[in-house]
Image (tube, rainbow, N blue to C red; front, side, top):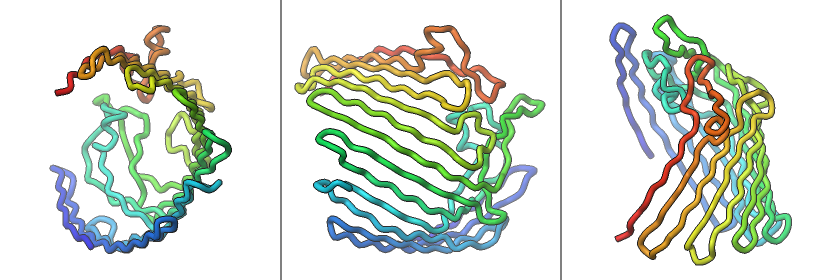
Length: 274
């Protein structure tokens, strides 16, 4: 059981008062699990809402279906313009927070296909409650050069699928994720990802590559490489390369077609364990 109160004020804008309570219950038998939560949310801007969530889970590592989860309900999440800052540092950060709410249902499953080979599947559907939409950046710049955002109601269906293989010191992975309904100003909705790694069983050295390719836009692929070596038991040397394509090709990666993003980096580091 939890309860909280928050108060936000922004000069020359307005004030927002929020009260929220939540009650959660859970049961776990080791293989099967169930949970339920219900709450009450009210704020001075959007009024009252009753968020809740119910779900079932299965955890059975020795069977073909190694894991399964399904849940649904009404979510309630606090969002502010500052949440965009990591991916979009030039976003306009003025304005009050909002308490966004969605009807939602999600399911995921893990499947053992063969020794060392597994698959993961997942899907999530969300639809905004009336007048309780989310915040999104528009990709358009204000006269001061900062990126604008707005509150919108959405309907979203996201699906994910992946394959993972591992044997001895090697592992490979491939995955897909895609949004099938509202794009909400996003240039890319469908991605293909891949990983490859090799590691010394004695933990002396390791190497890894990560790739992400846009399937429905001309956005540059994202490729990262990393390697580590331990010449002494207490000394670890690491080399990483981020966003390899712009770094080698001299191409520009843009943010909202307005600002140029940092295009690649190389980092060499060392760590001493005491």
